[in-house]
Length: 535
Image 1 (cartoon, rainbow, N blue to C red):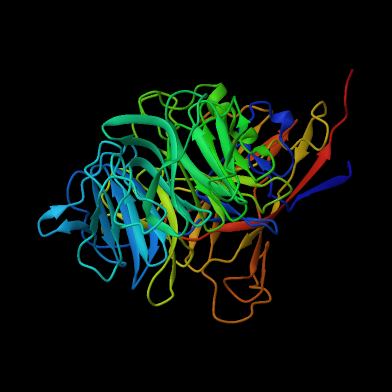
Image 2: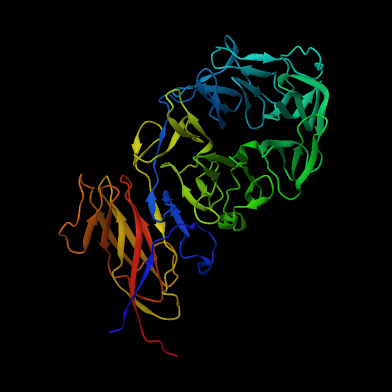
């Protein structure tokens, strides 16, 4: 009998890779996965639950853009939604008004822009908006600010209470910056203007820079390593310097750009942004890095829905990037269908995972937020249901978007396993699979594909693995043939023999988890015999 050979798969940190040629996949990469996480130490497990933060749907027309974390007298979640501004301290949302019965109205293309200045929140409502506003969370109403332009304030004895009408605002170099302005009835879409030093509601007429090139209009701002990053549709610029006398414009890219500030997410040491059609990039203050290579077939193969209008949402939450895209082979999706979650800490260059809610949506506009009890939350907006959603709830095995607990689909497909030679046929034996012990019993379905044929319903074999709920104590074996358990549940491992995988050149395994149970695996041991080759 031919020698039984063994090939182990313990490292899955390559994550999702959509490159079409299977021979290009690394051993630790997957061509298809949904709602499973990659453990940086190796292994795969089902994602945490996604559940609503508040019980009452946000009132009014639901056209959300982005969340913003504001810390003042009490921590507040700000929501930019179409033409209004909403707020919450962790429960239901209400509109923010500037006087009794008068909600703040916004005219920004991407919803209101927010900037924190100490205990005050500054709100830009668009260059065609009525005014900018200032608010602290101890006040019932926001304060309207008079437009700077035509009214400006001198450096000597400034009067305060002003703000230019603008699409964007951000704090940088101890000044308030705005961009894409309207001044004295005239639009200046390429203008960046800044306030007096330490005085965000005082503005000098001559303190601005026109940033030309890259198309008309500034679409977003970010601060990275002491630089103000300016995003236009087809170019990226930097403003460097510390004061009005030495601010200088530097060109960063004339090929990449950004269509919306909702496609920009600032991280600790840099900024992630989506450039259409090139994909997701990262600027660290020195160079621009392409972090989209593994997903580029989404663009090259035209898998992004033409019916969904930009912007694509980019969020940096839980030290991971959540990219919401309308992936739809029929090009009919009008909302994001998936979150492609990029973890830059996994492997050498980071790894992608693919998530979706149980109702097949990708979440948008996320933030990290800490409430008044110092409880930390990772929050997103559901694009079609008027709720804010908590994610990464690893103790939860179901989603709750609108009030009903519902299980979600999850699966992981391996790359093709051919014993390092696809030319030789093999008898693949019963694999040993190290499954994670689970809190809730469930069944994992495993489909076996042969010889690089991976079309739907082309599996050659199917078998199920029943995972029992972990007990309360240390387990050193159950007396069940083919099964061994050890560890303190649910951190332990359950070794299970699978079915014979078949006679072929190569195999691929598709693991589909239970919809209402946690599950995962740490290792796959593939056993096989090489058969005689003929000329």
